[in-house]
Amino acid sequence: MMRNPWKTLSSRAVYQNRWLRVREDEVVRPDGGPGIYGVVEIRPSVGVLAINGKGEVAIAGQWRYALGRYSYEIVRGGSEEGERDLLAVAQRELREEAGYEAREWALLGSVDVCNGVTTDVQHLFVAHELTFVGTNQDPFEEIHTEWRPFREAIRMVLDGEITEVCSVAAILKYQAVRVSSQSIE
Amino acid sequence: MMRNPWKTLSSRAVYQNRWLRVREDEVVRPDGGPGIYGVVEIRPSVGVLAINGKGEVAIAGQWRYALGRYSYEIVRGGSEEGERDLLAVAQRELREEAGYEAREWALLGSVDVCNGVTTDVQHLFVAHELTFVGTNQDPFEEIHTEWRPFREAIRMVLDGEITEVCSVAAILKYQAVRVSSQSIE
Image 1 (cartoon, rainbow over the protein chains, first blue to last red):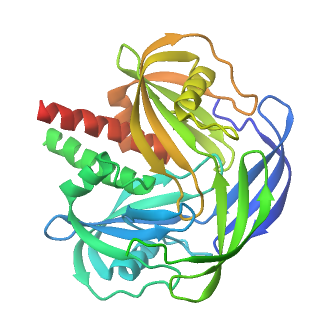
Image 2 (image 1 turned 180 degrees about the vertical axis):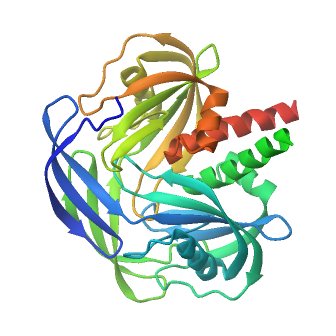
């Protein structure tokens, strides 16, 4: 039952840029009929829940071009071609977007994003013990980082002010883990 | 600060199939330099947290072709061309994937999925008061729905057995809303 019910007959690249590659596969569908499957190949990405000594979390605001609106998110970014060390990517993104280094890193888990279409797997990290080192933003981005009490970040999720789904997942998962570890103690 | 710092100079479709359309825009970046932006246009989608009278939630398992592995998720699906009523889409997906109709529907909020690349906005619903009416699956899919206690769904999220990000967000958001409404009462 957990086997792959699809067969891939052929595969061709139909579009490519620096950040993604689109391919169209000729397939046999689960029901045995012929079909195509368009896959958007995106390299693994990271999300960083950076929490300072006051219990505040870094919320990065930026205009999201694809969506056409402003978005409040945790620190996020993609890996470069060939990068395998996702912790190093997370460290770079925290430095570039927020200007901080962290001494304590923990993995909160990975999530699959838009899995009907893309290959995007986002690795969610929690960063503590922060030191300000200055920002160095990617020229493609214009990001404003603010620090919000963690409780306020949860409120922003519940009130629909934070809607970027990896940020929603990271904030609520961190809270759920804290609550469940408190109830065990 | 919340204005659009990008300028779009031109836009051309580079790939299209029944489910998505990829366009490449020629842009002026936030830093004023020239660039391109590849956008994957995906129609609005829905996620349904279907909860039966025993407090069990419908978990739909299926092989995800793009990811190349099996995935446990809430009931999810996309809208068709021109469909504007996302509740109707949610109702159809619940019927097709799980074989149920629901008398009570609530909106849990919307999330932006892979917003650096796609236009996908997933509308998350909670469905209660369920009646079995029989399944009618899309031939493109092979989905096995199981009913799990809600507490077990939370455990699957925290243990990394559920990694599809909209499912993670919906399960944890529903739980957070329940917890916060209990603490108010």
